[in-house]
Length: 291
Ligand SMILES: [Zn+2]
Image (cartoon, rainbow, N blue to C red; front, side):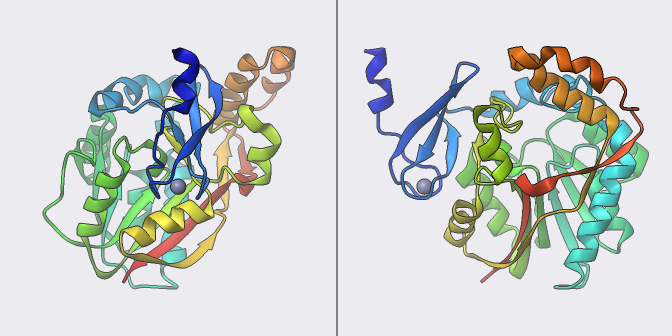
């Protein structure tokens, strides 16, 4: 009966069209929508997923997460300031809700640029760091389970949308807490990019179960339209990452590709504190406005 599992009808979480199995990665099947080409994990996950996957080790022990998230503070804060600069072309700073804030460095970058912010973060250690060390208002929990009482000019979703375990519910809430005429800023990975296609199954973002879904321009636009938002602008972020993060990411990938294991030794010559421009061809941001 197992062989027939692929014939089970599983609707696309974005457009509800039928989907088919694409490939298997580390015991997980990744499916693709026949219509909008959205890709998603076949197995449904629930709230428990957040606790298991985004524990402290996700931020500290490398692999598919971060080798030492707090050490990346300056780079991430600068990323937040770059986004504030980009947003200033479209709006004046107001109230921002930052979903999946981690320790709050992106939020801090926005606050330093004149925004008033509230963050939401499921990892308690990260949220506590942001509250105690950075003086930010970060609530602990997953966005599917808490709804802030205020309304916001901007809902910031940088590197968070592939991690929502209940996509539609999370975005319904995000839409509800956005003021009329307010904005969503979404940054995510592009499964339709040249890099993703080049690496295929070995593309770094195919790392279930911490990543649950993979977008491209079309399915993300469809999803936003479904929630009453229209695209204002789109681009690729200028991004810098540390030598330590590159080593961790690439090292983890090399472990999974048998033939490349020997190349790992060359990674060690990269200093941890080196800042490297990230070739972000497989990453994009989109600004949407509530209609
Ligand atoms: Zn679809």
